Length: 246
Ligand SMILES: C[S@@+](CC[C@H](N)C(=O)[O-])C[C@H]1O[C@@H](n2cnc3c(N)ncnc32)[C@H](O)[C@@H]1O
Image (tube, rainbow, N blue to C red):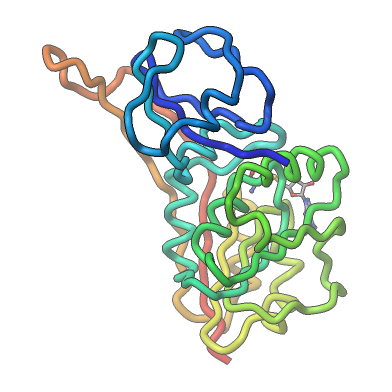
């Protein structure tokens, strides 16, 4: 069992697991977790001589601190995928290629408190990282991890939305049509244009077809030098989305 909180102390916010007996934190030092368990949520308290505040972590706190495995989807793309899938509390969403679970945590947050995320991940090593990362989410109980490949002959899982972060999503388009209800939405995350072309060709007859690439330019935040940063995160992936009308 884990019990994650966000500790604000010594000018920084850090994720802490209250289930650990002892904490050893930069800027604060070493202390017993009981001090945090006894602390009020939200109000300022004294933590071994340092003013501190304990908060519930939000999705960006959880995703920023994830254990890294296979390439995780970046926040700019997580946001677009969540938007384009039109997720609502109570929805069922299927995910192919859960990897280290950055998207899984975001999906669970979107369909909470009573939705469902069905996440296929065939590789043991990735699934172990996924399961550790899921322990950070207050919505982990909504996630069902399926230790299998999503394949054209997989049993269809009735769902409102489907997201594919797998190398060959075009092979799963017929499966997606069988799983999605009328108006259901599909999104796929693809690093290369060749993959996009194959998927788009296979989506003939679907509605609202879009291909999006998100670019984000961060700025320096020093008041005397408020300007774009010299280096920016370049290409991550294309997001292909479409809607099943039938
Ligand atoms: C890039 S990772 C996914 C990262 C994840 N979206 C995230 O945000 O952390 C792709 C994953 O797809 C899995 N995978 C590959 N083919 C698959 C398939 N047919 N069905 C399900 N998962 C598959 C791989 O094992 C890998 O973990």
